[in-house]
Image 1 (spheres, rainbow, N blue to C red):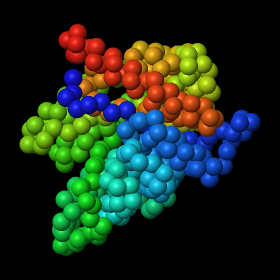
Image 2 (cartoon, rainbow, N blue to C red):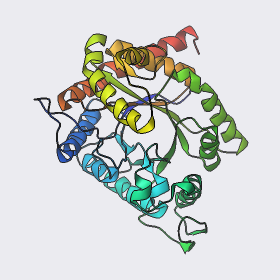
Image 3 (tube, rainbow, N blue to C red):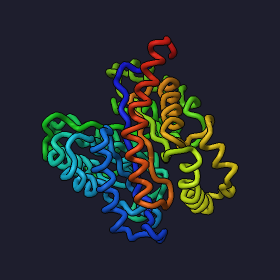
Length: 352
């Protein structure tokens, strides 16, 4: 088990939500809904609220930092970050400046999760060549790691203009917490350890136990690079209702819609009810069910991986704002204490 206290958080991509009559809401209303969801997450005692960056019609949020700044003005304790910031198609200096600013307005609650992005729309949109996919992320991650020291930076590479003793502002009061999101590449795990970033494992398919080798590799790599122990988080989709059946019925249509939309672009087979039932089961990556069912699955994940944070991606496809708010409330008021209780019982029983 990890010796860090477990935190439960939420992630959203700003999936276009539905109104009370079932119709799709506007991008603007969806973004306002996301801010309300962050406020509720803070009120029910959750530790983290992450907003993802996308540039396609399925998701309303393209500028997570602005949404998070709005949430910062209405929350007190919850940490606010991205899930993820697509660093490859952004500028590391500007990313640092934006998050240092968010850290100021949130009184030190800002975090940034950096990733290459599982969608590629931002690359042509901002003028980047996909043939440079690997180099863009490698160079920009290296530069961002230097910026985190908040000292004058000298750097040279192929993917942006060189820097010579460049000082970047604003300065933070206590540093900026930074992570790297990884979907299952050992090279990405080692890269995160080499630069001393926290690790977020995006587990969107299969059992979480399959990712134990990545968690072990990360910890070994930190040791080999002489880095201190850093936290591991898990990001997975889910939805909570009073009963398993209710949660499944509320979530299925949106999950199937989103998977089939992306699947048509990527050549995936049709997403079916049978596939859904596998995904919500013990060997699947979806945490959809009653508070008790979801808590058991999260506790099993923590026992398998030793992660110190779990981030539930609480909307997959279009679902009503009211149902999302109910899911968030159940997550904080019921799932959170249940997970801690289950893990405490495991410790007492000597289960690892």
